[in-house]
Length: 306
Ligand SMILES: NC(=O)c1ccc[n+]([C@@H]2O[C@H](COP(=O)([O-])OP(=O)(O)OC[C@H]3O[C@@H](n4cnc5c(N)ncnc54)[C@H](OP(=O)(O)O)[C@@H]3O)[C@@H](O)[C@H]2O)c1
Image 1 (cartoon, protein in one colour):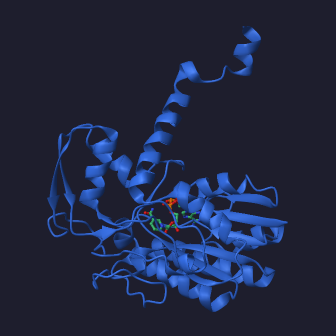
Image 2: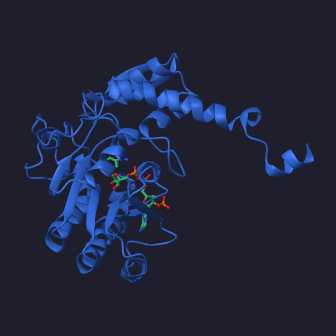
Image 3: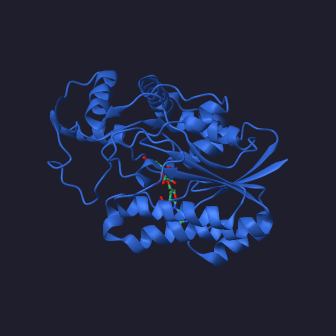
């Protein structure tokens, strides 16, 4: 029997991981949020490990605001680097395995070629640096570690749905013309594809770095164009360069992660991002229809009254 502690369990990825773990009868799931365990607080992590004694951790908690991290580097490093160090320290003491979710932003994106797992990272923003430091602590402190780098995440779970698709839909409600960056290329990945792969990884007896992303590549502009096509929304979008779109954090121009190890091990690859985008909208519509008052199951009180 495995006992799996999930950090950031109310986040976009963490909530999907919880959903998939709950389908497994050989797993006891321990969700944890900032309120129940602050990973940046050593005492809080110690207490959780002593109480729960997990066999595995799927570590999804992170400071994920890429631009804010430039203004608040201490916060980014406290959560992404020190937080991961704290988990690694107690995992080593309790013989716990950690699956740590990392990012394509550990690479500079300057080579114009896809990255395999063995490539040397070279982050160009604070978020990427803080996530890489987390990787390094994990490698140093814990033998049984799996570092899963993924990219351009989208999902419907989490307390607040903060992803590129929802941002595009929200902005286009008030504007019929948008400008989207067309010189950054990556691989959109969907949490409902990644979460089952992470759960499957619990059973794999190899350690180290894994790249796991959706198939296919695109720029943010191409991604946006497809989003409006699938959503059947008429929006005029204009391609601009990263230079024209001023943001606090510099972002890699070509951060395509190649899923070499996963493929070599014969593990199932994730669907193409365009297929998953259609699936995203199918699930979104379903969630909307379930939340409509006329489709909600009557409460116990209402049933009694009726
Ligand atoms: N989103 C992407 O495009 C992307 C791309 C590549 C890799 N990743 C990685 O994938 C993982 C999941 O990302 P996501 O998009 O699901 O992030 P998310 O929705 O922002 O979830 C992260 C969660 O971590 C929690 N958290 C923050 N600080 C914490 C602390 N000190 N202790 C405990 N929990 C804390 C957050 O809680 P609050 O909301 O209460 O702060 C949030 O619930 C992260 O490791 C991220 O670096 C993300």
